[in-house]
Image (cartoon, rainbow, N blue to C red; front, side, top):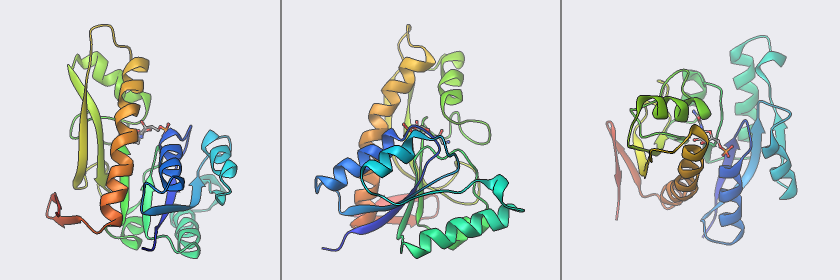
Length: 208
Ligand code: GAR
């Protein structure tokens, strides 16, 4: 069976990136990471990609005269690598409708909360866990969803919850959430690769 060609966009540490690459290399995922794009030249994820001989590109918005040109560059790179699925794995920039349309129903994102809680503009990375702890929720978790033209609002593919305990801090909650992210993001890629995901309005049906 041919492997799904995955392009990953990431801004930081890249533990989700690593998990996908590891599962793919072990033959546990019908997918192959063919390119990594980052908006930050100091992102550790770049090193992780180089360790696995995966081509990397740093594409920074400020190096372009407009958002359009910046995204055009990313679209060009992803197309050069014949990417069939774009995975946002800790990518901290918001993509315009133009980018999303270029890869319609082929962009997925991992978000570190149970959407629709603690999501949307301004909720990313540790800010999400800080907000969850401050609010006092007893359950948080992670969500993988298709990306549409609204921030963190596309159809949900998988969610998994974690319990928040009284002594959790944003840091310990982030660790718990990362553990479930590392399960559900590869699983969502697997389902996509196997053609099992069907979008029906706001819902994603997982076919048998
Ligand atoms: C993950 O928790 C991911 O859900 C979050 O950034 C972290 C990246 O971790 N993404 C967002 O907040 C996007 N809005 P990683 O670099 O170790 O994969």
